[in-house]
Length: 210
Image (cartoon, rainbow, N blue to C red; front, side):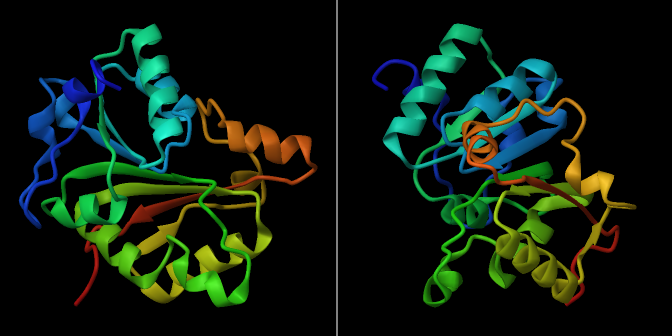
């Protein structure tokens, strides 16, 4: 936390002023993938190791998760990861438009009580921001083991209109994407008998119509 984090932490820019490609040297600057709420960093670090030519940004504000991710990064010796440790919403607002190629939202807090549903990260606001910061054709990948959160996500995506669900059949949401390294939350869900669902969305070429 004292020595490695300052080298990797992404400063919070003024709204709409951050171009994350400037955080990485070529060729990493040509594609930027963002993981929101990376937990202990297992998925983030594994993906960065699979794709050393891509720049990765992880957003997380829980200290234990950040510390765990830093340990994984130091052990792996990766140079293509940067971290944002405040609030992912603020980070999204700080980004310029059309600067990300992929966004991961994996096992977000389901806020299961109906009175708390408004706190779920998938919302009309977040989808507006995703549509703004992703490049046309960019991907939004969501994983959850909570059936109601799956229904919530699909309903919001359908109503929003800027994204297409890429699934052609049940195997597409039942089977992990290619190269999937898993997460600690996924392992816990499987141990407890819950079935993960993998949702892959593509930003339409025209983006969000306003």
